[in-house]
Amino acid sequence: MRLCDILTIDRIIVDADGSQIPNKEAALKKLAELLSPAVSVPQAEVEDLLMERERLQSTGIGDGVAIPHTALDHAEQQASALILCTRGIDFEAIDGKRVHIVFGVVGPKRATGEHLRTLARISRLLRDDHTRARMVSAASREEVYGLIAAHDASEK
Image 1 (cartoon, rainbow, N blue to C red):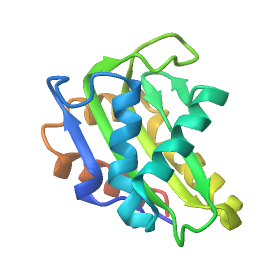
Image 2: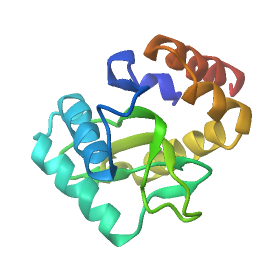
Image 3: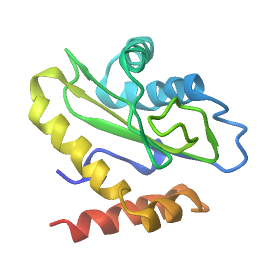
Image 4: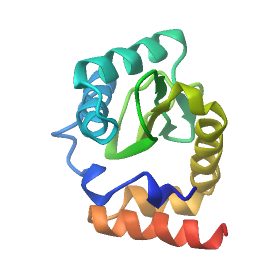
């Protein structure tokens, strides 16, 4: 599965001035808002599960990246959303640095293998310094989606 199969342009937020996503809680709330219609699960349920996952351990993996994720009993498919915070937010990341890229994923509990493959694909996309920098400096959601589509095409 390609990332573009589970991510749509309308589920990408580019917060250049920091006015939309000032902190971790706002990021998780926005992810839930974006993802709940895609998986036909109430927003409050998605938000609660994302928050619960963060209480276990931050999904801030370092290098300015966080990958909040959860699995839902009654989700029918995987979906992702992406928030780019140009100014960065405190996400309690393992390296203590501010997070600029928040890539959320939700999916069905019954599809654990697919969920793990998606997380691995996101990690491969974001491990490159140049790719991360291009995403964070992107002027539009369309530009970000194009970067991800190009990466998908190169991973055939």
